[in-house]
Length: 90
Image (cartoon, rainbow, N blue to C red):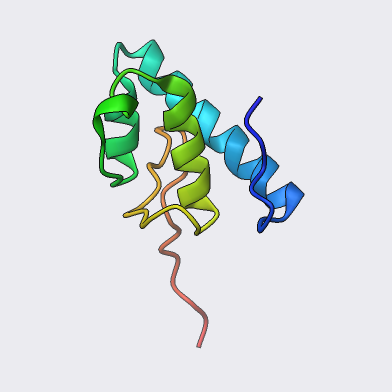
């Protein structure tokens, strides 16, 4: 189990870890590597992370919590609804 950094809220860390695991599982299912998962979030890949899913999950979770680097934009799932463009009443 990945230990929660002391400076993060336990609930926030748990949510970020769950999202990171889900994202990595999707990449793994599609035949990708940990470096592909890190790339989805705009995170740089070092040598030891290229083959370590656990480290990739931790790095993504840290980035989602705002303490592990810059996240370009979290990938949207294909099932996510498109933003509504309904006109507003005047």
